[in-house]
Image 1 (cartoon, one colour):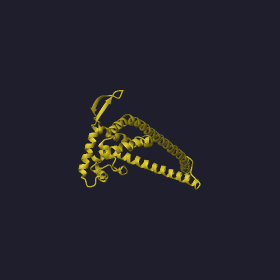
Image 2 (tube, one colour):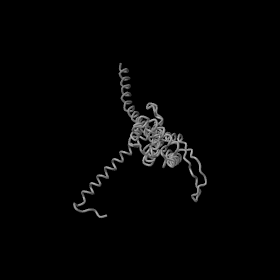
Image 3 (cartoon, one colour):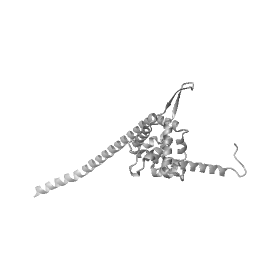
Image 4 (cartoon, one colour):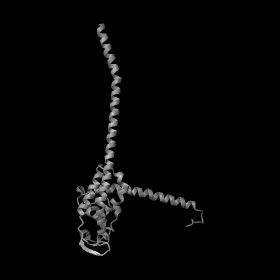
Length: 249
């Protein structure tokens, strides 16, 4: 009887002794998991930033030269004239329904189908414009018809945007450096993208559209803050100037 009581006492002693040890082991395990998760998140963030830097190089080497070529063909064309009539503040969904509303604001009473056909023709004329190649003295040595690869241009933009939309690359890293040229580029091809999106549920170039929406929204918010600060500054200057006097120029 005494032996049994003694055995239970030992088991109880071991049980109570192991409890704090298990707690310590558990705490150490949790700390290890926390540190491992923290290190993993740091690596993901680092890789995301590195990918953003690589895409900046891609943008500079592939997209900007094509953008410059497109702008050269675009400038002074009937397509440019037509695009300038579009209200860019209404660029959002990039589909045929939205574009119809925007276009018909400037073509009331006309056939939408005919207007679309005309703009398509203007775009084709711009992309196949004759280009003069000049020597160092500015003398034309060759005249050739441009064959700008519009599909490749837009597909490269989609690839670029896809990396940021999916989170593979960090958007904040490149926003300030690239957002203005990106927004301008997408606005220039608004017709090209929207024309193909005649079924809202099955859109093409979704990544271009989503990145445009996000960066355009951020740009508008920054502009609003900037304008508010300018207004506050102007008001502060106005209230500091004595009545009947003006600041010297």
